[in-house]
Image (cartoon, rainbow, N blue to C red):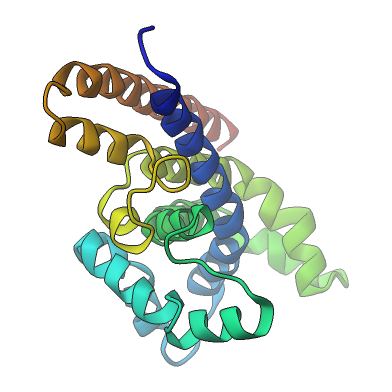
Length: 227
């Protein structure tokens, strides 16, 4: 076989982890992007810097911080384990959390740009006619910004497919549980005679990345036509 069962498992796990990451991060990214695009409040600059921190910090540092917060003895992780029996470190859910944190700035940035492109006058007109803030967001702002939200989700998904440092630090490299495609390539390169397996996995990784970038490009052109 071109790839063994364990390698295919890493591929499907990568797709699943990326989907969970985007699905979990997207609602919060919408809220944060809207706050940064429309809000005027103390600490706005600090929130903006915090959101974009994963872009400039080494992924290993992000993984270590996640261990401090969500590890079994972490501030949040310890409480989750004691109260609900939920463990995130070294699990598939932990891999999704690490990918979500790393892709979160990309989601927020794309959504914020889409919100900035929406004419505030349309929102003000709706408010003057009696629409509430939430109704205005659902009926006007979100539909107009939907293409940008879609672009952000696709780019975030593609970024999750290649995440390595945060995942291996927080979720480890456990075959069948946390071993995503980048980690499987790393493991193959560490094994004697594993260059061929690593090359085949790399071909799949490149193909998935090209598909993600192509989808983002198509969605972006759709956004330009709508504008």
